[in-house]
Amino acid sequence: MGMARIPEEFVVQQAIEEDDCNSHRSPSSKVTAAVAEGVFVPPLNFAMVNDGVFRSGFPETTNFRFLETLELRSIVYLCPEPYPEVNKEFLESNSIRLFQFGIEGRKEPFVNIPGERIREALEVVLDAKNHPLLIHCKRGKHRTGCVVGCLRKLQKWCLSSVFDEYQRFAAAKARVCDLRFMELFDASSMKLLST
Image (cartoon, rainbow, N blue to C red; front, side, top):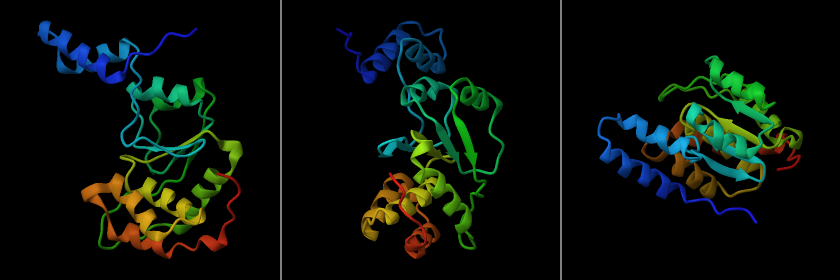
């Protein structure tokens, strides 16, 4: 019979309370202590999209233990910046394949979202051989939101539900250009292979 895990909030709270008694430690040591205790920390804006498909912001080293539990085969990285060496080492040690699509993070008003790159990313996401898979950009809001929004259109979601999901992650930073891109995305030109 396996042992029950202590809820993450309790372990983190306990580490903070213990840290208050040991004020010589820095605030960041609170998180380090919690991680050392076995807490799994998901990346910023982490969520499940579908069976075998996840989304998030950029994974930090503190997120690696959590990501190991997902048994990922692939990561879809949507930023143009080179993948950090420590992240590459994590991918190699866990046999995770990196797909990078290099979509620039731009703000309005003159934004050109590269539709062809979004389609290429979707082809990787739709291929079940790549699952389990994590889609991420820097914060898991705009670029990731556009890819997931277009996936939802392929899944025949109504546009208001696509926008609601995008809004949940983008919050006050929602961009009209992203919403417009998702609205105009032609899902009929792609096949829904399996998600």
